[in-house]
Length: 188
Image 1: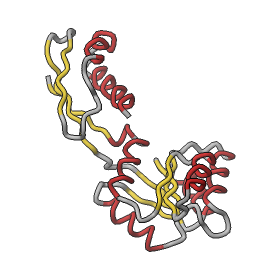
Image 2 (image 1 turned 30 degrees about the vertical axis):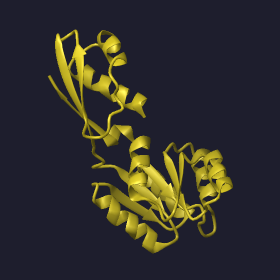
Image 3 (image 1 turned 180 degrees about the horizontal axis):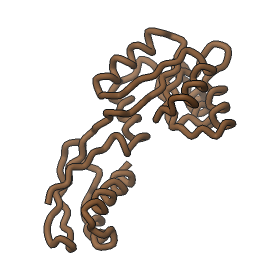
């Protein structure tokens, strides 16, 4: 994840017209994998001063498609995500999910593996067949190591067992969506 943060740091530097090459040596001396809310001081020879960089979690505007045959599971995630400013779209089948991915173009898809008619694996296969690139998380009751391996091999980016820690799910989302998740506050 620190590589993603470095990319964002350099995007911020570009915004302030600070060249990446001029801070490479400074970055190697600075650890950018701080906890959220922590601040790093980085010396920039271009501005001949310190940049104060603070990381914040901000998921406002992220659009997630939740696919689950269980209405309570869909509604629970919708309520929890709303606290983070995440817009949630829901579907109860793979077929409906495919239609919504094509129509709404969500940023992330979270799906149960056990769906009626077509399972989560079929959904991932259909997304690939249609060349629909979208990060995916399997949030499922399928809890064995084999289930996890199978989900990751099928193309899911992450696998999380239901009865999960919500903070863990948010961390997964932040990792998969760094352009939404990490806001840098840069002060000269």
